[in-house]
Amino acid sequence: MSVALAAAKNAPSSIAQRFAESRLAWWPVLLFLPARLVFAFVAQGLVATLFALRGSASSWYDAAAWWPVYSTVTDVLCLISLVWLTRREGLGLLDLFGVRNLRAATRQLVWAPPYFLAVLPAVAVAAVITQLFYDNRDFFDFRRAPR
Image (tube, rainbow, N blue to C red; front, top):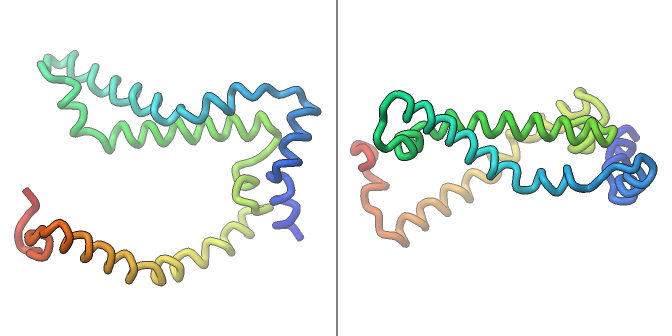
């Protein structure tokens, strides 16, 4: 029952009704669509600026090697934006997943490892077929480091 109530909060008719009642604008939701791209560009720009301040002649290319740093910054900015948008609409993050509370979410997450294990053989077969198709013999030589 609690899952049905949480899912009903995220149903299209429920969302349309909330927007009509509260007079919320659509522009924040539309701006969220390209937000990840903008956040990634800004985050990499900040890292490139740090390299430029340290005297790098190719700061943008030097910053590219630090992609885990600005990818993490991008993810955090996206989560902050998502929290802001869901609170603005009167929802919580768990409502987006169709669960009522953390305990229900945990019950659903218990099934994640068996699903991953079930899919793993297909992923392995697809990786081998892809490498055979592209004729990359180094893929099978685990002693050599990638170039």
